[in-house]
Length: 263
Image (cartoon, rainbow, N blue to C red):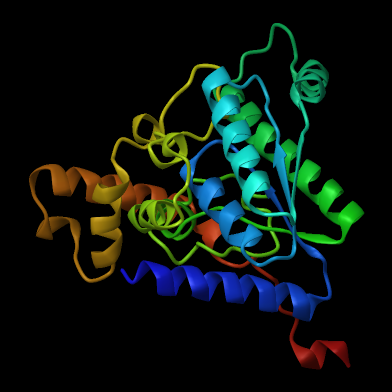
């Protein structure tokens, strides 16, 4: 990949979009992972106002520290960068107390509350974005957003622009290196940070991003019978998750009304 060309292209795209939209810049949620690290740096390079927000919810200390270190590094390098931290744990605990029914057991309640955390962060980003005339800048990559749909609908998927959604995860790591992000961000193990018990993306998905990317690049041209061994296992994982995520990947279905019925 021609890293510098890609960097320059995205920075120009972000700046042109913001100028044409008549906004002041971008707001980005910084998690301590490589995706938000790359996107926040690219936004900062536009020279426009870039508001970085840390939003811990029952977060592990190492994730919070990585996010803070990265935000402080960008602030020291770019005068247009502003940083704030909003502890969303009290708000989430109140939501939990309101929604959770004692004595009731729902098999998918943990997943539901994990998605609720992501949606609470989305609300926070749009609150500060509207206050400051900023667009919410998404941090999803190609394999997560359009491959397996590994994100929360109306959570981290609720954004105004998505500058790295055409880049595979491995390519995002290349950009992180080209942008000279702090070492801890470049080496961060992918995790969504939405669970009380820390689980990496690989543990949740059952495959690595390089494995998934290989399948995604061939998806639609090969079937499960074209694979064997580990590749076959990963194809089945990708195929199952991709089909299950259609409601996220495709536009919202609209029931069309025949024109002659309007007469």
